[in-house]
Image (cartoon, rainbow, N blue to C red):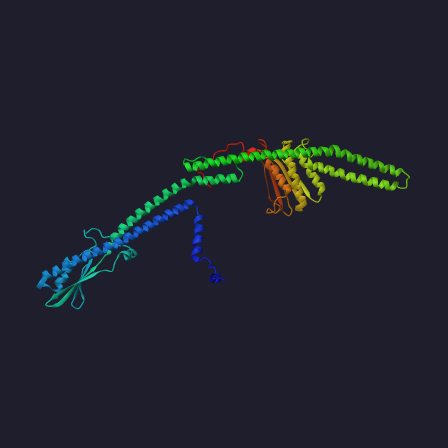
Length: 502
């Protein structure tokens, strides 16, 4: 065993987890916002760097200015003291400070031999005597100001220090000048950066608008709307994407149309086969069963009139054969009805649906069946009429077998209002135990869904108002079974690249 096997694996640290969360959040944001945030961060970094440079230069310039003022004031004091010579006295020195020694950025204080203040001058705010500067904020003054320097000039008379002139730097006025300049530059920088970010936001929005339109188009394709087309933009890269998208949508539409035609052919072949089988059962099996019943009844009659010892047994057997043949006849009629309603094409669609509902009333007498038929034509073609019949048959069968309902409501009508044109609408709703949407559809539902889709219609189911399950089927009445529903054979209005996904 290696020593490394005993070393426990370390879990990611807090910093790594924080970086992972921040990265996930960053990539979850729209590209437009990420670009703007990155630009704003760069501008902030540039402004911060410029501010640091301004502060450093201002500190240096202030120090140089204060040092120059102190040096000039110190020379002036020494010259004044030298000129006074024997006339030097504290009152005269104080008068000189009050009248002629005021200097910019320098405070002059005269102390006697004991260190007491005799006179003090106030610094001049502006060298040109103009209006004084506005005082800078304390936080800015602390950034710019350096420890105030001081220069002491001793006044010696007769070998003794008679007084001391203290020169102290006062950078407040210089800092106020820098503050006014910095504030003006900050306002200009704020305006310029806001303008830059606004222009960048507009430019990025226009540049990324094709991606939003592409997402919208893909959503329409996902929903089955193959009429979605993208308007080619001016940018060559996005124009290529738009052309590929339009070609893809057209290919999907053609493929969907071909699949629909194949489905219709398959359903037609199935219906033709069922028609043939139903005809055979009706024309061949029906008469044969009738003959069996007739002969069995005849044998029973003959046996009852015979005095043979086994005549009663023969009559009993004949009656049993007749009963079995009757049950086969009933089964044959039901099978014929399931294969192909014999009245299809001969009676109106409303009567066809009513007959089917009446049959279920006989099969489930404890359930109340409510049929509401709106405005309907006598028929809508064999394909649509048979699809409506099969859908109604499957929905009623599922309700009776699985839902345990007390009432089943059926609505059948033609709808002409709406943007999708005239449609044949069928709804079946029960108040039973409901249907789990997560359970995959069975063979029956899959079959009617295939029929509805082949005709360009829509099938949906979900919870009903009464707590059970509601099925809704819509079949288009325009065209060849609704090929235009998903855009096959139609040229829809192109979707502009500037449209946004909302």
